[in-house]
Image 1 (cartoon, one colour):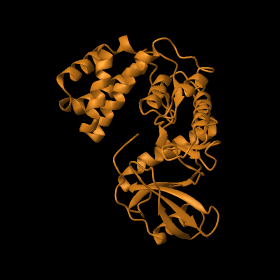
Image 2: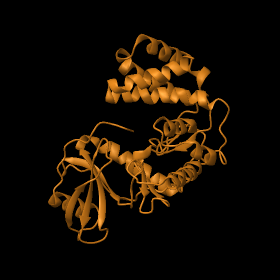
Image 3: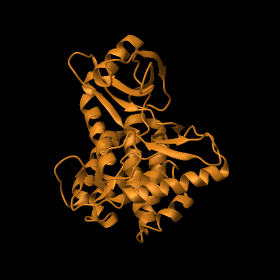
Length: 306
């Protein structure tokens, strides 16, 4: 998710060494700490060590964020055990009364985020094909109920979970929206079964799939390779929510969908249903970012009203 900038958090090599020795290898010393681009909520740094692993990614935040990192760890392990989705290996969870912060230590995968990758036109097409291959494989994993992949199975009605989330996002930003948009959102919430299916097949999703959460080895701009997907939350949802999210920030285009549909043909009406998912995303971004997303939110509402 595209969220506000990183909190100020200084990580000295001495403290980083303490973390690495406690969680990874007691013989390692951190020789350098370098900020990494791409962290949205957390402070992300690359730790260089004097041994193996030579490079470690540390995602850190205040101690109160420990539960979120525990969920991220569980998600990464779930993806690694149950799917072919490439994710960084987990090296340790920073969560202890002895430390004033929380976080997670991860394997350093090669590459940069898709947002920062320098790709040729053929290279961009190649990434779209690879993205479709990874997402279509991920979406073959299904079960009989929606909810977190790491907890007990939840409900079998998609709208029972999604509806309250949509309502909650709306109520938190209602007063920031013009009356015409408020009327559209009120109508969608009141008549949600008319717009979305109640019982699509619960499908495993990444949960936050956009360009900043996709790592690309762009050493050869014509032959890039997706090396990892990061910052996911493994859950079973309506797969069209993930597809819509890939579109709303222009991460996936026609090439992606042509390849994806060879395995998972889109059902009639997707272009209409995706608007409801875009609406949810824009409401969430209005809550986090404020006024600059009111316009895009209004645009989506206007398309729904047509």
